Image (spheres, rainbow, N blue to C red):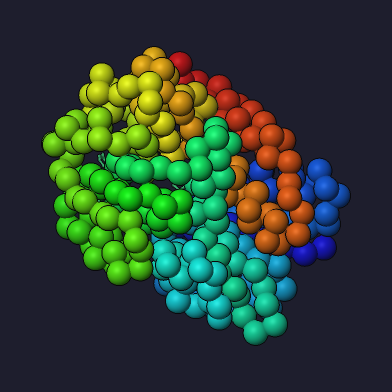
Length: 282
Ligand code: NAP
C-alpha cells in the first residue's frame, strides 16, 4: 500500500480525500489518500517525513502552495509560471511540482465548448486568480480585467505575471466593476464571496446571454452569482467542476489513469449535499 495526501492548514474540510479515495477504489488501486494538517512552521520536517514514508505524491492547499514551489526539485511550466504548486509527485531526487488548477480551468471551459476568450473580468487576485490568469494566457486571451478588494494585491499580481505572459492585465476597483462587465465575455469569481452570504460583487443585470460565468466557489447548490447568471441566460461553470477537473489532472499524474470525472463529480456533489443536510441549515 502507498500513500497520497492533501496538505494544508486547515485541511479537515477538504473534499479531496473522499474524491480521491473513491476514485482509487473505482480503479482498484492499493493507495490511501490522507488529509494532513501542517502548521507553516512544520512544513519542512513534515515533507521529509512524507518522503521517508514513500508517499507517491500529495496535493497542496492554502497556505503552502508557494513554499512547496520553492522546495520542489523540478517544476512543470504551469507551476513555474504561477509560482504555486498544488500537486507533487515523487521523483528519485525529490518532489516534482505541478499546478493542475491551470489545466482544471481550461478543461472546465472546454466542457461547455469554450476554447478561446478575448476578454475576461476576473474578480479576486489571490492564489487561484494567479492560476486563472496563466490559464487564460495559455488560451490566447487578449485582455484580463482584474478587480480586487485590495488594490495593492492586484498590482502585485500584475507585476509578477506581466513579464511572463502575453495577455494584457488591467486593474480596476471593485466599486467600478459594473462598467466592465459588458466588455468581458467571461466573468470569473476567484473570491469566496457567495459561499456563505447571499452577496454578489456586481449588479447581475449587467450580464447578458453571451457571458460565460465561472464561479470557483463550490457549494451544495448554485452560488448567488451562478443563480443570477442562469436567470440572465448565461452559460455557467461551478467550483465543483473545477475541483473535479483539477483533481482528475492530479490523479493522472500519480497513476497514469485518466479518471471518470462524472463519477468524481457525483461523489463530490453527494458529499456537499450530505454535509449541508447534516449541518441542519436550510
Ligand atoms: P486567496 O488566495 O485567499 O484569495 C482570496 C481572494 O478573495 C483575494 O483576492 C481577496 O481579496 C478576495 N476576497 C476575500 N474575501 C472577500 C470579500 N469579502 N469581498 C471581496 N473580495 C474578497 O484564496 P484563493 O485560493 O484564491 O481562493 C479563492 C476562492 O476560490 C475560495 O473561495 C476558494 O474556496 C475557491 N477555490 C476553489 C477551487 C476549486 O477547486 N473549486 C480551487 C481554488 C480556490 P483581498 O486581496 O482584498 O483580500
